[in-house]
Image (tube, rainbow, N blue to C red; front, top):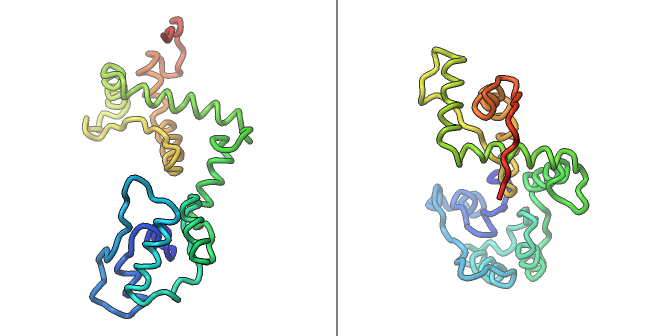
Length: 202
């Protein structure tokens, strides 16, 4: 997003590098020169008012050709108020595509099978944050598999975050890397085979 013109750099903060590039004033380089005051809420009207004032302060009223922000309704409304052409930034468009493709967004889900799998994978990853024993077992499994590994170099499972689409990739990759260690930690078997009855949740 930082590479686009104003996805957050113009909707919530004025980046000095951006201002310097447009105005030719080098004294703003490396600074945040202005920021939208976030009170109890930041409505489209509030954002529009701040954008108009901030652009005027730097004589940049005619400098924004296309506002490339995320698809939040308040950003869209602010741009409509300012009669500003707008487009969702590429990063956020990709993020939405990933969420729809993985089944996490959209009703009905476009990929219910993958959505169900990812829900289980996320719950599996999160289980380690609730168990000191499971964490210890997984660390020991990694150290046993690689004698050259130091305790501080062992990895922990990652969990996905619905608002941070890259976390989905991080979770899937990390769980694949730690597959054997996760199986050993949770079942005692490298292949994940377990004869015990599943715990009853209450």
